[in-house]
Amino acid sequence: MAWFDWWLITALYWAAQGLTVWAFVDALVRPSAGFVAAGKLTKPGWAAITGLAVVIIYLSKNPMTFLGLPAMIAAVVYLVDVRPAVRGLRRGNSW
Image (cartoon, rainbow, N blue to C red; front, side, top):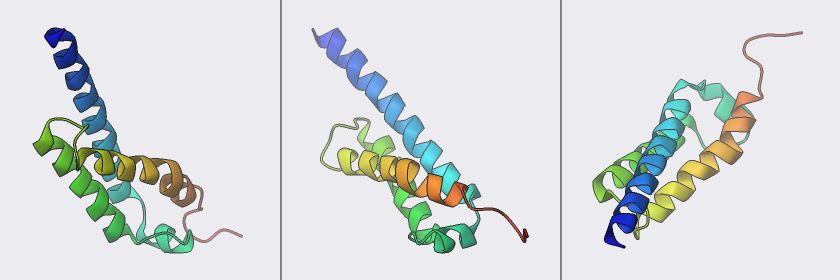
């Protein structure tokens, strides 16, 4: 049973780390004006939140901890709510 627990926690760790890194990188590459235009928190704010989530998951080595779960929730909120709103805006001037 201990091997199953180890494999499960390891799989959860890598999935959580991948998800938080994806959210952090995506927050960095989106234009700053898109966050304000979509009515969301600013780009530095989301970059800090998702970056902190990456650090928490990396240091805890287990996403099912007291700080790991809120870090995962922050990354999921960014990817589900903020990313589609910012991504849906057009770039530059368009008539």
